[in-house]
Amino acid sequence: MKCRKFKYWLDEYLDGELPDTVERDLIEHKNSCESCRLVFEKRLKLFAMMKSAKNDCISQDLADQIMETITAYPMPEKIRYHGKAILVATTFALAVFGLLFFTGINNVMNGTSIYDSAQKVISSVHFPEEMNRNWGEMQGFFMGWISASIALLQFVASIVSVLILEYPHITLMVLGLLVMAGIQIVSGKSRFRKSQAGYNSKF
Amino acid sequence: MNVSDYELIERCLSGDKNAFRPLVEQYQRYVFDTVFRMVYNYETAKDLTQEVFMKAFAKLHTFNPKYTFGVWIHRIAIHSAIDFLRRRKPEYLILDNDSDPDALPMREQIADTSFSPYSKVASSEAFKRIQKAVYELEPKLKAVVILRHFREMNYDQISDVLKIPLGTVKNRLFRAREKLQEVLLQHQPSVGDTVS
Image (cartoon, rainbow over all chains, first blue to last red):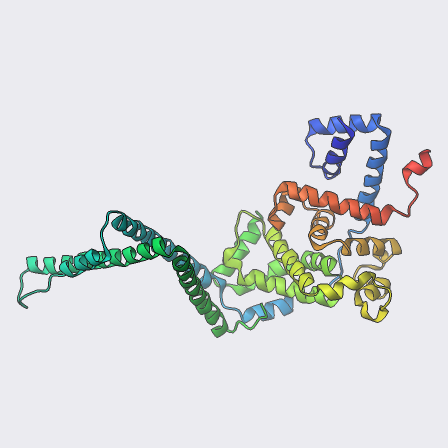
């Protein structure tokens, strides 16, 4: 073992964190190298000094004061479930947005114009001609609205895609601001909930 | 992890606020000592200790059973103390300025034997020199020294508390010890002197 390595391993040895194999090499080197032995003894002295200063503080019992403040707190478990719900909702929203975004990009790449997308929205809506329609007509009616909704979302995604391709910096900045605003609204509601329940702490 | 701590946390999360009391009673001494060594001010340490437990309670739902409650509460304690030192840096940095003794509350506390929150046995000059040397380390280095030497945590635990890689723990400990050695052992006759 070289002296440089000895200094590198010394602290780990004194902390009891060194593997046995390296430990043996380190002790052998210490016994054979005078300058490293001095380094070792100096460090050992520091460790002894630090150990002598390990008396814990004598502090007053703060449990009553802490528990008194905690009584005014809302229960943490409520926040836990909100946290999970927000996580699931965010994941779902991101998945939908991602899907629509790529659909929109695909539309733009395939040359589908925004005007075509808008036409698709209008043409997929089937308004019922009579009020006393049968079940088949009802099905057609609802399917029409569902396909219209999807087409509408694709239309929006196409617009966003065009904007991103044409004005990437501005669009991404606006989207970022919208996401930040959303987070702010969610966290703001959370803070409001805490204050409503008597959360009067400074943090 | 400690089963009883885990059960207490589960009870807290199920709505039993009183289940938090045993956790406070068990850990307040360690938290206070850690925070005190970081900020070296008794009243501040008291306030910060309370703040640490409040934060712990408010964030109990985020507690990860992968860690022990002790590691988790120390993480909050160290970060609260570092935040405090960052906010109060100008006042705390004048520790070495001898020109204005009135502006040195920390120095007075260290010099005043009646102040020490430690037992009288621990109020010796040597003890205070070590405390002062640790206090004067930069916060990041001070944290690893406190966790290793006074809380007796191993490298893995320190890494968990500070959320830093093992290599960084070793590096910071080495740097901190080099500085402490320089301050604490510079006026003492070295072993080398006696040999030659």
